[in-house]
Image (cartoon, rainbow, N blue to C red):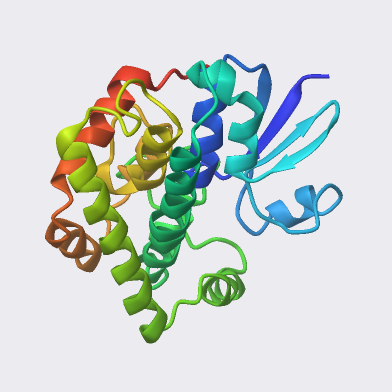
Length: 245
């Protein structure tokens, strides 16, 4: 049986897993899901209903880090060091999870934006798309899951800023985190911060360019001061994003 990767089209954690599988030339079938509707698909195979999920002949692997563990030697040519694994986990938490909270904070007041970003295939910028079915229920669920409260927003903004500034200092002095070759940390940073850097090679690029993001989001992104990371991410995508699906 060919493995199946369950994703959301705009999910940055899904992109992290997908990129690693493509880099390793791993044979899989892509099964993108609509947030909310994914519950009926995933409920029979996992207890915690989040993506990415890789269904293989030998079992279920859930979570981008676990999927990377499966293919890292084929993808990168070697196993990651303990330093790399620690930084990967830090980026997952302080950048990946923080950006989940922040993205939904900025877009949940705009049902038409959410509607476009939740499509299985990208719309054109001129298309009019309505809110997702049961949008109010979905919005409430997302606010709870990602703890979108004034207090927590300040916490995640600080967490994002701290980790990003640490990475800026690292990448000022090296091309790759491990000093020699493209590895897990580089892929993790690029995939999880790709929604801000918007590299054209990203599979999610057509979705994000189909919408006009709120001015509050655009101003916030501009004021972050992460251009060094954005340039590095675009470089990683241009040089290493092998897309097979």
